[in-house]
Image (cartoon, rainbow, N blue to C red):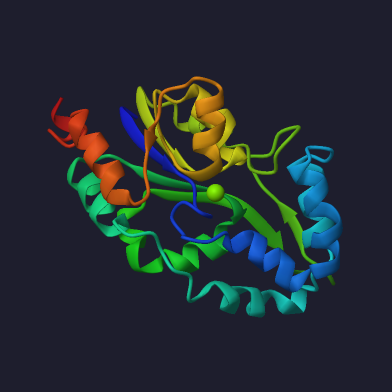
Length: 217
Ligand SMILES: [Mg+2]
């Protein structure tokens, strides 16, 4: 793969943090106990998230799906996806939340998205059991492992939080907002700040990403 765009879902494609809201809604006690430990980095995402999600009864799964249906998307996504498709550049969504939720929210754009990778849920038991093909020692969805899987020659990653930091450190070009921007600024790393996807699209245009299809080069 020559070029690829790796984009976070929660707080990046969506305006709000849907996954955290979902945990607080369906597992309020476990979320109140465990999430602060994760934020304080006393507990890894890999160990902490199953402690929260594992308290949600499997029969609630349809309610979880309903919970995300009206999620508001950040402006400019359709334009960026159209540009990427025209330039034959894969747009890959990497979410630390459920793959299924991103699939639901992004259904109208699914034709323009190359792949969606995230957390899977097994609903055959009494409570949810979560897993991911991308887990490592620290994270259930190690985003750097997804990028390594595709090993593109050139890549941009787009994100907003600490779960995007490891992959941002390795990516040739980073578009960041919110806490990810603060972490990168503190580390003295270059990045493109964005509030909506038209800025991402413009930054890629400036770097020649839309100039010609990758297969023509
Ligand atoms: Mg995020």
